[in-house]
Image (cartoon, rainbow, N blue to C red; front, side):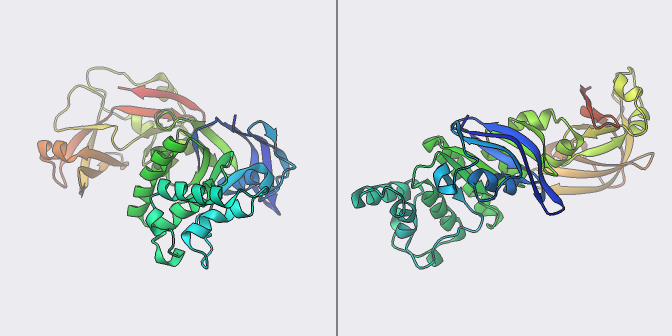
Length: 357
C-alpha cells in the first residue's frame, strides 16, 4: 500500500478532531477523503504530510514508517486550497523551486527539462514567464499541482484543491485532474466536502463524520449500498420516512412490504432517493400512496415534484422532463406515487436491507 493509516487520533484541546481512523490507499489510486466541515479530513491529510503531529496511531508511506520522519523526508507533494504560489516568482520559477532546494540538487539542465515537462503536462508552457497575478484561479491551481509533482513525490496530497474556484472552473478542473492522474499514475489522496467532486474524480471514497470513518469503497458502491443513515444522507438528496408512513401505503394487489419494515418500531426510518419513485395517474396494482402535487419545479432536463401525502408527509420526487410532460402533471393534482427502491435503518442506525419493489 502506498499510504497506510492505523488507529490515528488527534485532539485539539477539548475538540476530538480524529478518532481512531484506519484506512489504506493502494499504489496508483486516486482516493477521496469526503466529509462535512469538522469531520477531520484536513487534519488527517496534514498528519500524513507531517505538518501536524498525531496523538496516537501510525502512518506508513510506501511501506516505510513515517511517524518520525520530517515532511521533507516523507516524499509527499502537497497542494493547498489557496495555491500558495510565490507572487514574486514567475510560473517557471515557482515550479522549479522544489527542485532547487532539493538535496542533492539536480543539475540546472535537469531542472529546466523537468519544469518544461510539467508545464507542458498542465498545459501552461506558454505562460512560463508570467507571474501568478497574471493567471486565472484555475491556471494558478494547475501551477501549484505542477510544483507539487516536480520532485516526483511518492504520494500526492491535495487539500480541497478546487474549493476557492467558481463552479464552472471546478467542473473543468475535476475532469482535467482525472485525466492527469490517469497519465502520471501518482498515488493521490485528496480532501473534499463535495460529493459530486469525489464521485467524478476518485477510484475510492472514504466518508468521514465527526472524526471517524463511516464507510469506504468505490463511489457507486457507497451510493447504492450505504452502511449508515449519515452516508445515505450525505451522498445526495434523500427522503426520510417513518415506518408508519410506509405501512400506511395502499398495497394494491400484493403485499410485498419487507418484514423488517413491518416489524420495526417507531424509531426505524426508510430512505428513498428522489429519483427512486414512480408516478402514475391511476393505481397500477403496486403499493402506492395518494399524493397531492404542491409544486412543480423545472430543473432543465429534470422536474422536481414537491408532494404531500394524506398523513402530511412531504416528498421530494424527481422525474425526467419527458415523463412529466407525458403525464401532463400540474400543481394541485392528486397522483399515485410508488417507491421503487428503499433502504431501511433501525433505531440502532444499523442497515437492515435494500428493498426493491
